[in-house]
Image 1 (cartoon, rainbow, N blue to C red):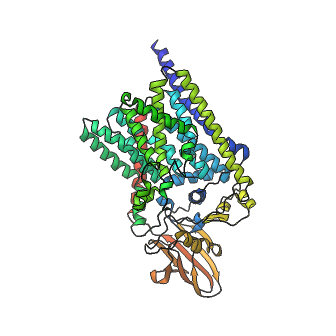
Image 2: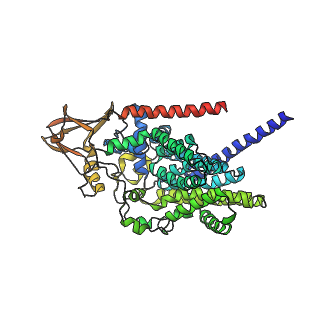
Image 3: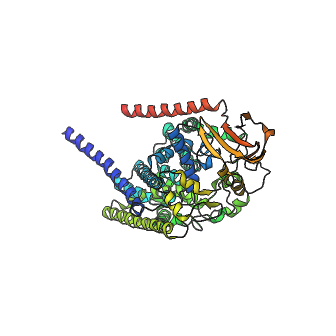
Length: 572
């Protein structure tokens, strides 16, 4: 009898694994159908920046010419530092995806599929952790896959979507803490570390999202000292697991004044109820869910348990921050570094979306499913089908725009197209993935070294000193260095389209250059004295002596952490 019961439980458990997996993968494939059927591409506003990043890591992996700091292949082989300051390990993972792809079109499909699957499983496991029934957790997970928080990568190639994909999974420690009143040191540290490796700003949002949960739990806990001590332990472990990120920021930032990412002077209008309303209306059912959840929460608040109250309260906090209800106009005038880093208030809608859907799942599970189980199931199915239809229509409009407009990529400010429309369209399907990056460029100056006193427009300087001169030089890569060769008619000053940081070493025609041998532009590009005839300039980057051992410790800490988790699971 006990054997039969055990077999029955095992079959139920297997069903709860393979069925959600099948549905999530199926939804991910259905989301790709418009691109699969049309063989169309969607080129958003941020694709060039990230495609250059990932082409860089792909080529480093392919050739074995690794350079943790300098860009040897991407960004016109300019030697600028990007990936080391922007999720380096995850950039190499994306580079592997690029290598697995035949062209940029294939990469779009592969990356979108993987993103959707991660988002689906992430939301499903968060809901399940909150003791939501599997069918509701699955319906909510499928719906989350179709929100703009996740689909931002599809339509704009905005990288915060990857943070959104991992966000629900990373919020599990917060849910556990409210339920058990105990800090899971390992899970909390890994969650923060994973998010930091993926997307730094999403990591900031994750930590802010933790605050309501951990402050509430700390106040309610009878073991405040233990909670505090374990919280500190989690912080220390997460610092160890993210050492490669913060150490690179220190190493580069201490000796260079870096150009900050785009500072939005009109922060107050980039909210989900103004210029960025697509976050609220994609899919359209989301705004209905949001309004009903607010109504239901205000009406039944007194009946909510602790978990539902904290989740709903945290959702409301992030909702306010993502809208113009928050006084962004006043805050914008203060010119605070942290506010400048946020750039767009709509980013707060990512955790707001996760928390909203978790609260909705809890409400459906505890207040509706007991009496109207079939209606809940049918409602989730209808909402997801309609949302999928809306997403498919939006994709077809974007693909149609790409094919039928005069210019497949719009000639916007600071975006340059060197080929005709046919060449641009063909480059997305070319096995030589550099072709697209060669004929379309955008003068994004993030993380370039600059002088604080220099007030010139850094986008324009990048266009002048890098894009404007790169065609005159032959560039080769090897042994963690970049080599530029060119032929000059006369001995004269030459503008070199590479970026020099404090620890970048320039060697011209066999001679190491000192500060007096060159001048630097407002974005760190050098002007050197060339000789008549053939010239060779070699660029290398001197990594601080303490950085390499720290990277080794960081990698070992990940290996030990993962091994410990696997051993513990095997024993359990």
